[in-house]
Each structure stands twice: as structure tokens, then as C-alpha cells.
Length: 299
Image 1 (cartoon, rainbow, N blue to C red):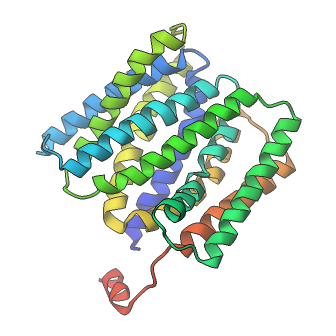
Image 2: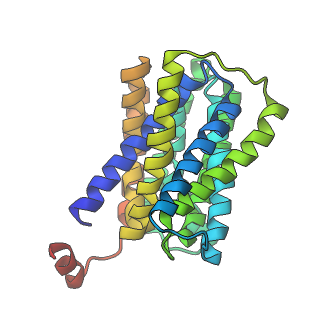
């Protein structure tokens, strides 16, 4: 893994994790599904326009179209839609922690569905991640957390896991920005249909809403997704997923700084355990490094 890939991974993790805080701010002043639909419409149109400017084609491969549709439905409509709704009742830090378990679920899914072998370190990481989540949820349930909001976040992270596995087919054939733009437009269309059926649409125009909406649209929405697709193409899904171990730390830190959300000692211990569990799982899935790999990195 070269320095450019490391920089891309760190940037992605920070951008991705900050989205929970900006989403929490947005839902204070606007209905969640409608605001998310507008965000995806803007981000998607920008993404497609940039793709065309770069000379990218609408003609995606069959695998790309399949992955783009699944990604648009599972990540944008389900994962982000359910998280936006849930953050009307739960804190951004808790939503970030639940979402950060995706690499653990992805590793479990590849083992159960695709028969991928899990090394002892990976198994230990899965158990540690589960223990960390149980510890955090135990403290939050004892403090009276909204269980419906937690349930929505759990369904959301399962949808994100499916989207991540589906994205394997979208990292070949080029046209990366076009893939990003189209999957956002797919999510936007679904959310525009769902919003009037499931919520009372409202917008309370405030400065914090404008700033949070602009940030969410451009940074986590467009830039982070584009960097993630490029990173997958550069170093592969297994190595790229290692950077997800930073998500619980970054997510909690950003929510604490901008929203003043406070975590107890057991919460912090749980975050540390989940983080180490994710890291252990991803390190266990790294392919053995060969001499040719070492030479390619040096070059």
C-alpha cells in the first residue's frame, strides 16, 4: 500500500465519519428523507456532469450497472435514508458506532456466503467487535436510548454491507465518477417517492441547515464516495476496507467536537474494542506480501 493510497484512505474515513454529525444537524431543521433526496439529486447531477466533462461514458459494463443499482438502493436509499430518520431520536455518535460495524458484518458474510476462510486473528476480531457493540448498547439501553432509532440503524448497516459486497463489480471498466453520479440519482428517485408517503415534509431555513447541507452534499456525498471507488480500484476491497477501523473513532470525535455529544467511560472502552476488532479482522484478510509486492511499492 503506497502513500497515496494511505492518504486517500485517511481522507475517506474522516469524510465518511463526519457525515453522521452533518446529518444530525440537517434533521433538526428539515424532514430527513426529503432533504436526503434533494442532496442526492444535486450530488448525482454534479457527479454525472463531472463524469461527462472527464469524457466518461454512460455505457457501463453489465457488472457496473448491477452494482450501481444495488449500491444506489442499499447504500443511498436504505442505509443513509434509515440513518437520517433514526437521527431524529438518537445521537450521531451512536449511529456512527453502529455503522462502523459494517466491516465485521462484511467479513462474516463473505465467510458464510462465499466460503472465505477466516484466520484466528479475524475470528478474534469478530468476537471483539461483537463484545464492543454489546458493551456500548448495554450502556445506552440502560440510559434509555430510543430502541426504534437503534433498530433503524441496524437495518441500515445490514443494507450497507450488501452494498459494499455488491460494489465489487463496479471497480472494473472505468467510468468511476459516472458510477458515483448514477447511484446517487437512483437513491434520489427512491427517496423522492418514499418521502411524501412516510413523513411530513418541512424545511426550516437556517444558517446551520445551509452549511450542513452544503457540506454533506459535496464532502461525504460526492468526494468521499469517489475517493472510495478510486481506492477500491487502486488497492482492492480487502486492503481498502482496513480504513473502516478508523470510522468509530473519527465519528465519535467529530460528534463530540461539533455537537458536544459526551460518551461515558464504558462507551469509550466499547469504541476502542470495536476499533481493534475491525482492525484485527481486516489485517487477517490481508494477502501475504511477496517480494514483487515490495518492489512495486518501492517503485
